[in-house]
Structure formats: structure tokens, C-alpha cells
Image (cartoon, rainbow, N blue to C red; front, side):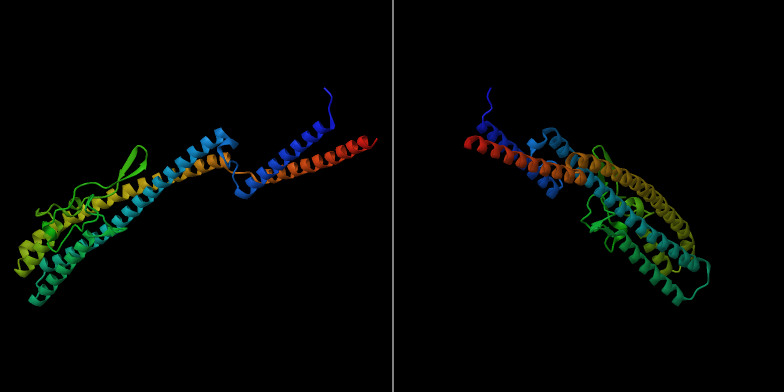
Length: 295
């Protein structure tokens, strides 16, 4: 087949258009940092990119849940420590009232402090994390304890957080597990009420009997602290695992979607060189064609 000048020129223009298209493609990749700007660029790669992006979004939610769980439990640990300290102080002043000869004025002062400690304990029972009550089960928007805390029923539901597609972890501890059932003899708030009443009646025998109840309340708080500590450790491990998964998923998505800048610069320069070569060849071809025409 005879190769005419028109065919040569047509092929030359086609090559130049292709070179320009490649240059624009690499310039776009450098400006966006992305290998794939449209599905047709890499149909297989876009599928992986979408998959990894979806998994990363899910991973971010699980990581946020793990951080929320740890923060919730950290706050729970803090307020339980406060409850423990309140009970220790209650034990000290109750022991003083039960085992010593005290004046009515001192007894009245101790009773007032008991009532103040009771108010502090109610504040502990109504503690919140991020605006949600931590001792009212799933009814986190409802304050669990009133001024009549000894007779208040709290929600026994458990507040859970999802940390993977198949794993949920308990976050909340029901108030009744910490402070006792409403109206029960071992209810911590009732303990304060009883001690205040014993002080009012100057009943040292009853005060002595209350010391054992205080000890039992301290033990209950200590058990709750141990449970919270174990859950905090679990959430910390979960958070680390999810963080590692995030790094892996980010690396995988980057391998599919992100441009290697150094390589892209080299490729752009290469295409620019190819274009210059095409233009140079084209100029010579056109000169030759013109001379042939003149002859």
C-alpha cells in the first residue's frame, strides 16, 4: 500500500493529539493526587477504591465508638472513685459518732456532714458523659436520682457500642448495681438516711451496726471499679486494633488511588519529550512534503 503525504500527516496529527491527551492526564493526576478520575480509567481499580473507602468509613465509626466507650468508662471510673472517697469519709465520721463520747453539737455537725455527703453521692449518681447519664441504663437522657434517691428506680438496660460488624461491648453499669435497688436495705442512699436518723436519735448501737453496711457499700463500689477497669483495658486494646486496621486500609486504598508523585513527574516529562519529538518529526515531514511538491 502506498503511503501518501496525507496519510503521514493524519497519523502525525493523531500522535500529537494522543501525546497532548497523555500530558493532560498526567497533569490532572499531579494536580489531584489521584490515579483514577473516572471509572473508565481503571474499572478494576475503582472497585477496590470504593471498597476500601467504604471499609475506612466503617472503621472510622468503630474507632469513634471505641474512643467514646473508653471516655465513658474513664468518666465512670472517676465518679466511682469519688463515691469511694465519700464512703470512706462517711465511715470515718460514723465511727467517730459510734465509738466516742460526743456532745450534742458535735453530733449535729456530724449529721449535717452526713447529709452533705448524701447530696454529693446523689450528684455522683447523676453524673454524665457527653451529656448522657451514665447510671441510668439506656435512658441516658433521664436523670436517675432525685432528692428521694433511696426510692428511685433506675433503668436496668445496658448501653452497648458496636466496635466491629460482629462485636458489641457493654459500656454502662446500671445504677442499681452500684448504689443498690430502690428501697432495699443495702441501698447506699438509704444508708445515709439511716445514719442521719441514728445521729438524730443518738443511737450509738445502730451507728455501730451501720459500719458493716458502709464496709459492704465500699466493697460494692470497689467491685464496680474493677469491672470498669477491665472494660477500659478491653476498649484500649480494641482501639489499638482498629487503629492498626485503619493504617492497613489506608495503605491499601493509597496503593490503588493515590499517585506516586515522583513517578508522575517523570511520566509527565517523558510525555512532554515525546510530544516535542513528534513535533520535530512532523516539521521535517512537512518540509519534505513541501519540497516534493515544488519539484
